[in-house]
Length: 136
Ligand code: HEC
Image (spheres, rainbow, N blue to C red):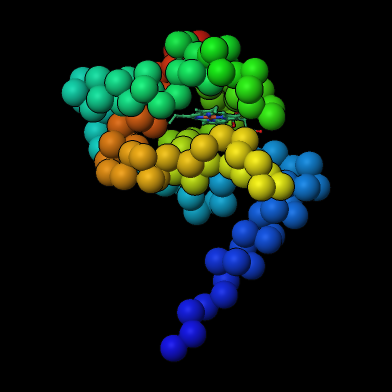
């Protein structure tokens, strides 16, 4: 049986949206997702450790986007302290899939390195704390 071709079609659509200069956005159904992992102290501690290991080099210790490797990215890393226009599901989707543009990695994908989805949600819970209570 032939496998459905829609993933390739979707990637093409996404790529053309990016070429049109649109912001990097998760699909609505992904944005609407919320963490199945409650924000316990242990979950946040695990998320913090994952952040330090995988994200801090670009996004910086406080999420401002001023990590040591930030300059090596084709674009400046997003400011994770400004979360007015994002959601748990959006962050989860971005962290899981990363962003590639014209064959160049803008942000690496982490579903291969942080294979446990619950761990990625813990990371999301931690990233959420970078934006509060300063951002609305
Ligand atoms: C190699 C550098 C690099 C690493 C490592 C990295 N990122 Fe990013 N990240 C970026 C760049 C560059 C962008 C901006 C992409 C864009 O919107 O053009 C970004 C954007 C984001 C965004 C979207 C911000 C927004 O304003 O919409 C989130 C959320 C995010 N990163 C989370 C993470 C997390 C969590 C990790 C660790 C698992 C991580 N990133 C690791 C470079 C990196």
